Amino acid sequence: MVNEQKDGMMRLIETLHGSGLKVTPPRLAVLEVLFDAKVPLRIKDIALRLKRRHHDSDMVTIYRTIEAFRTSHAVRRLDFEEDCAYYELLDPARDRHYMICTHCRRRLDVEGCMIGKILPAILARIPECAEITHHSVKYFGICKRCAKKEKGTAKGSQTSRSKK
Image 1 (cartoon, rainbow, N blue to C red):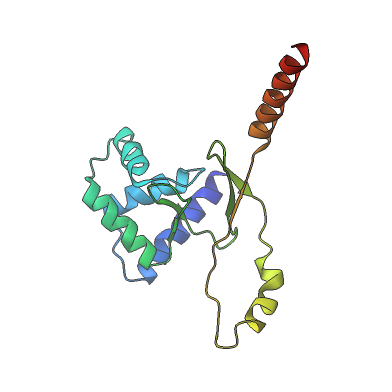
Image 2 (cartoon, rainbow, N blue to C red; image 1 turned 45 degrees about the vertical axis):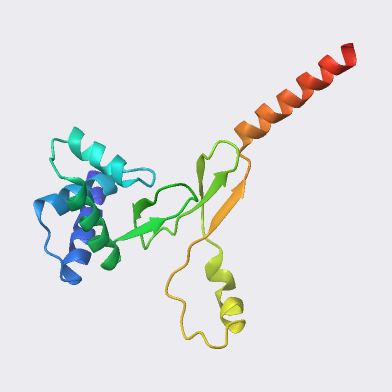
């Protein structure tokens, strides 16, 4: 597992070098935070995790680093329709998508991507499109936890009404 992590990190560093980016200590620190993250992070989450690791990077450096990573296609920006953006590493081996609960705003990881299967049909509907280079899919709904709470609340109010 440790060797796989080192290999993954080395591939990311090679991606940055291939894009002409120098891998400076602040950039490496941000890259490590994103690499270790299990969920997409906001800029302030990245700053907090850097601080915990005793890396003293200011917000401007973090913003510039993230933008440089986006330009080099190492990081993608996610919009969960909140007041801020989230960021995660682009993983060519795993195309990540999310379902956002409209009640609690929890983000659930959607396993597997089906876009590749329907891409020819999508391209056929866009005659002027030469190539689709990337995509972003968001699903909205109610998570099981909120659905269970909602169902319990509905039963409780029905029971209290029937007693009257």
